[in-house]
Image (cartoon, rainbow, N blue to C red; front, top):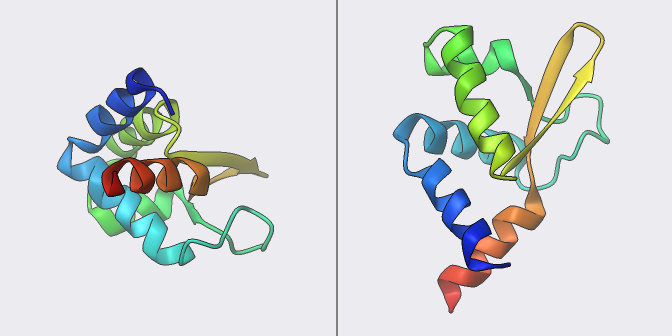
Length: 98
């Protein structure tokens, strides 16, 4: 992964709320969910409930995480489901390992 992409990822993770959201999604999925299972990921409203912040604030943070490539979002009916992007997480892990 190139340096500019990693900088974008780390910038997105520099916000405590975004870091908490990513951690929640990662913990929820155990690193395995990618929309294949009907219950994979979390809805935006469930994330807002867990974080105890408004939907607009969560939507902003999710947009930043999605633009950095850290999460994927999928619309299912009237709900938007979010899950971590394992390739991005693996790239960050690989970078940190050296």
